[in-house]
Image (cartoon, rainbow, N blue to C red; front, side):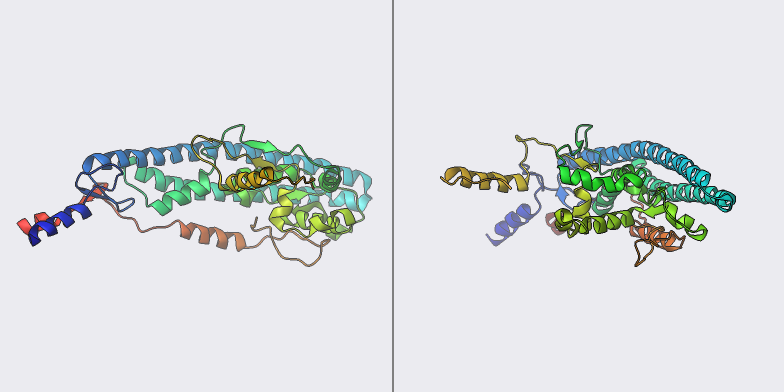
Length: 358
């Protein structure tokens, strides 16, 4: 009787992990380390391979679209900077005219520096894509952590649709007046949206030009022309703090301040009421039920090499440094994993009953 009980317990612990399957497990998956019968494992294997294939295709598509938009933006930004710099030169004295060559050289140097950082981003992208494709071509699973990391870094928009990205249209009068502040920061709205859309290219999308007329000295002209994206937002915060109607907005966090901007693209989450409900929506529905059930009536109510520290809003000099290389190296190290070669995607194992037979 004891041997029968022992055998029954062993069978229960070796059943296939798949829901609804009562067959005895035969393999252990190297991806999730769960035990499956052979049929359920092959279904599980097909799902993983399809998932990896989808990530690879989305990464390839994102690379083409991302580099096209980023290069177009950088070139347009440089062209605009040339035009604005020319206006300054035309209104300046002979000393400024002689300095125009230095201004143009600076703009070109910055354009090339951004393109170099774009290339560094693409090299990192290609390295990670090579890792995925090398495993995919041999039908070898990446670990769950690596797949999740690749999806979050490069294929985060694989389920987005063209209608899921929207621009706020309900901007109030005060907010509209506040955002006039950004008019002199050329293409700041495009820069912020590109940084949000192509996260893996952010190191190449860092600054905007500020060509508004202003009393400047010759040695400060480079600082005058270019501002980092985060510094522009801090200048905006200072601007809001000087207005009583906008003072409360200036006290918000950087992320909240950014999300309040009318020109920032917003991602609208898909709604499939037959498949799932968002947690926040559930809590809102419960609150609405309580209000409707009562008789009360109520009324309404980035960082990269360009990002150096400074205590002055007027002396935010752009300086080249080695911080970006260090950060890129650190980011690259996070994706490295020990390479292991497996002849198969699973490892057979011997059950307790088979061991007893031997």
